[in-house]
Image (cartoon, rainbow, N blue to C red; front, side):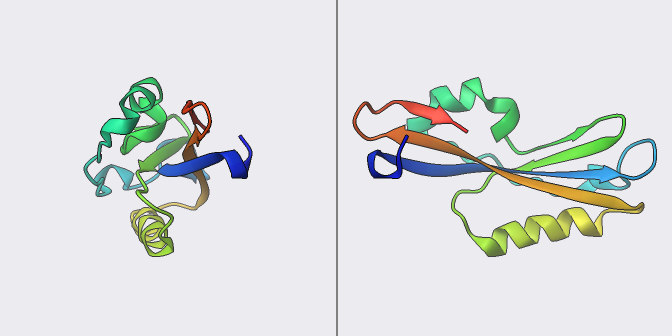
Length: 114
């Protein structure tokens, strides 16, 4: 998928906040999670990779993962999501942010999620 033969659609940003102590990250259950916006073009990809794309809060034994959907690469939206995670913390924590993309091969029309 070279840049000259593909286009991309940013669809999900995953922000994980991990506590430094055992247990869940303090307060993340109260995080506002926006409504999932569906684009009919990507229904199959959404279904296959739902757990990585759909906005959610997932609590694990040592960390909590907060998944936000990005409809474009708007730095203000990314900063707002990061602030939401930071302001809900009561313990020491770290943030690991990543962005997922749907790539479309312009020659074959094949869609791939990265």
